Length: 141
Image (cartoon, rainbow, N blue to C red; front, top):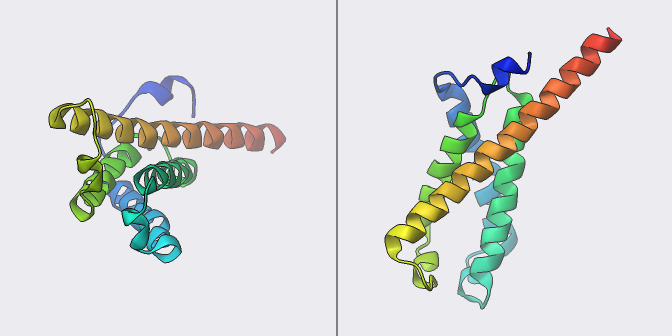
């Protein structure tokens, strides 16, 4: 894989999009319910902890997908992250109650842009690690 192909984004691979979304549900949302249960959403500062937990687990999952997928898989984790965030918004409406200084539209646009950047960026890091591993294997073998 050369560096010129890193910037060429093709069509969306639906298989990796579904796999990434399922990984996000399985390795982010499910452990959240196991670890914290639903009472964490009613405590002070629970929204901030949930946001940090969700963002970091989303980055780990998207980075892993970028590392394990063959070829360039960048858009799929970003789109799957958007779908995952939409799932969280449909399940929990508490972040909309705590926003201050933003209109509802600004909040939605900013949040979904941030979610896409986290998924896309983590997948890019995973792809970069995959390229480094392939270079190391080509040099040694």
